[in-house]
Image (cartoon, rainbow, N blue to C red):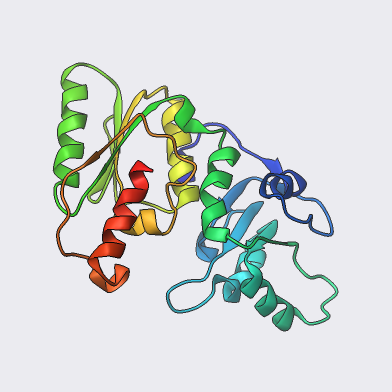
Length: 241
């Protein structure tokens, strides 16, 4: 939903490498966005190639470069795959490599978009059940009191009177920070978001500053992803630590 942004955001590849405290690429380049989806790359984007559930994102690097990606950010396993695929190509893409890519992506995205949660009050809600209800109640209270508000959750993203259907409860870090930057640009001071256990386990909200967070309940769910109740609990706990 970067198309909602009013202002342009950019960083040099060197600045990004310095922020991540990693080695610079062979050349510098201007980065104007961050994307994990090779099918949604805009010219100038940094394509982030993560390990997925079934395959590594680096396998889609050629598609991302063809779409105009300025460079690629990946982990060590992704870099090994890239080197094998590229061989001795003369025009290899610019690649940055970091060890903890998931852990770095949230803070990187927040920094790239100007740390938007410093300009608004963000309230996070997690729990097995009740997240959506609590989020809508809070949004309704704000609107009844004539306060501008936004909501991000399982059903939709609301920005004032605009509504957009949600793909997942909590979006990936670059999309999240771009949305938060949109709220900041529009001077929307009150924002509530549902924070899923998947998002917490995958570090999607790392680098995000909350004014307050709430917990509804914990019951058996998502164990196909977390494995057991203790891991599920520890994922939820990350929002409070």
